Image (cartoon, rainbow, N blue to C red; front, side, top):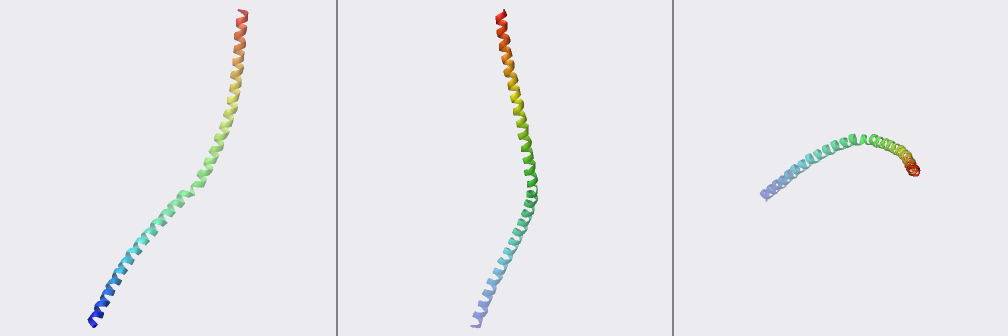
Length: 101
């Protein structure tokens, strides 16, 4: 009977030692994951710290492009008017040339 109790206690001790080793591995694994996640968070913070400046710069460039486009449309309209008038002058000149010749 005493031998049974000693063997049973040894088995329980063996199981407990196995569980301790598994928990120790789990602890190391969780510690590594925590370290990796902290490093990832720091990198993300560094990356995202620049985002507001980039967004502001993009907005400013968009405003500049819109202003340039508006000026371009005005210049295009002026050029179209000039070409229409030149075409009209050409037609009149051509007809007058045909009338007098």
